Amino acid sequence: MCSSDLQARSAREEFEADVAAAHPQLQKTKPPEPLRSLSEIAPLLADGKIALLKFVVTNERAFLFVLRGKNIRLLALPVTRADARRLSQNFRELLANRDVGWEKSSREIYSALLQPAEEFFREARELVLIPDGPLWELPFQVLENRAGEPLLKDFAISYAPSVTLLAREKNFAPAKNEKFVAFANPSLGQEKIAER
Picture 1 (cartoon, rainbow, N blue to C red):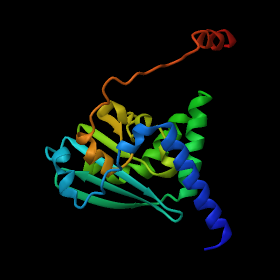
Picture 2 (tube, rainbow, N blue to C red):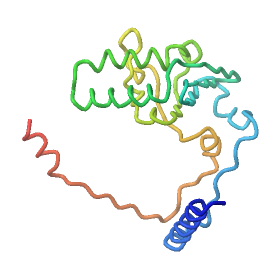
Picture 3 (cartoon, rainbow, N blue to C red):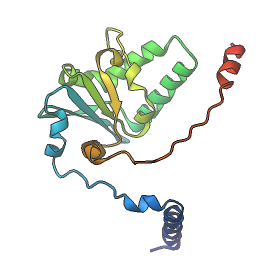
């Protein structure tokens, strides 16, 4: 093992020790075991009302796994990692700048990422999206189909970090007696409104 590998390992171990010391409650949690088969997620998808859309983005192309009921489909999409990054960034900029061109971009992205799989999720009521890489930055709920309708109009949309965590979700119970604190700047909205 070279010295840079040893330094990286040492730095990681030191970081993990610091986190463990600062947050001992994390020592009680274990990462979920990976799924051994799709039957472990079958109860969630059994009635066909939920479709799971799992994206995998590589440097050469993207793939979309669609799970609904007892069916699974794999589609190759003509999108590379660089394409996905560019599409996501450009679309978010159009939305942030309130550019009227966002709708055209929205339809183009829908056409590239979702339209090839429409027939497999069309009858679902809810879509559970598991994006990958730069697709995490993409607000799928506002993507418009060919008719100009946003995805959110036809489906309840939710996101999951992975199929494994989604399947294990039923095993997670909310922590009891945990405290939550949130801070906000109530005048921030007024300043932004005054600027316009």
